[in-house]
Image (cartoon, rainbow, N blue to C red; front, top):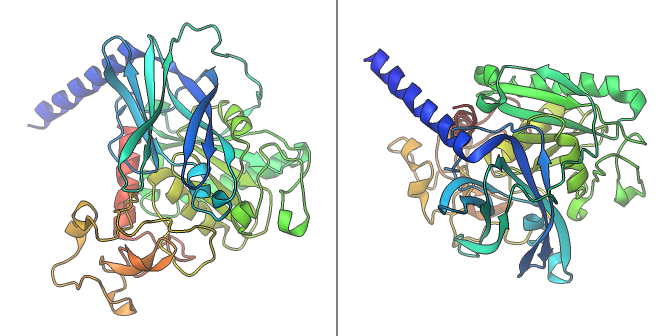
Length: 422
């Protein structure tokens, strides 16, 4: 029986590999575009197409199965109209749309999607969730891989340092760590920091049990100045990917809008996930699903920040806290089920972790320590005290805690690891 099952799995793997080889080369097509709008509208416009030398993603799981995030890209073979690749993701623009500023001005953000480099013409469709959570088509492109305007320039070539190499990128989760605010003289410090923070990740379950499924690279890309921007304190630094505290006027929110430089630097290694390490001891960080994550290098709770933020960018986990300042307005509409696997508005709880709640556990679950360690439905999460529910009394996605992902978050992370490493 075991031999038969193994043979069937091998057959599926071979067929999937063949499908990849039918449609794609082992390189990346990068699509840079501008996302423009306000709190109610958004439009897309093409910026540039780039061929990058590595493909870090799966060659088997080409179609997204999670449907997390705000947006979704579909890649179709043009001749046959066959769906050959898809991914869901979110961006800084999608968060900005929920701020007060978005009610007053129109802004453009640079964004990127990637897919394996096609062998033949493709049609790429960009969808966005409407206010009811349903994907709607917003934009599409037809791309000819033989188009000589697809750039092959390497604008930011830097050495890559191997922190963890577990094998073929096609069957590993590939993380690339980008430094910001480390000068040339501080590159040794960056490598030490990157190693230390990689170890932090594998202190937490389920990452520790899956360490052999990860590759981690650090790109030695120096900045002109040390540190990062802190606009609220009048501090401005010339750094390579221009991170900044006070994103959306929230002091601890540390992000960047320098999307193209970030992607140019990341292309020095095969990657699934981008992590920016900022040379600062000021508390802060941030992350967006399938976009990028950011953390600070020197802080007493740096281990928590690194692991918490990766939960957002890698596994699509939502914030479970509700008592910290944010700039968002109605980030999770209460009449729509959130896409995040660890949050619910009870609109469609059957699609979430209902099967993990032990019979007899009250729903909603009383928000007290009596139910600590049990899976339930605890009110408060997604930045609000009422109407959004989380699966546990406490979790690394809720409080400053180490190795404390709840069972629902652990399962979501494990499913994502499995998806990338099949």
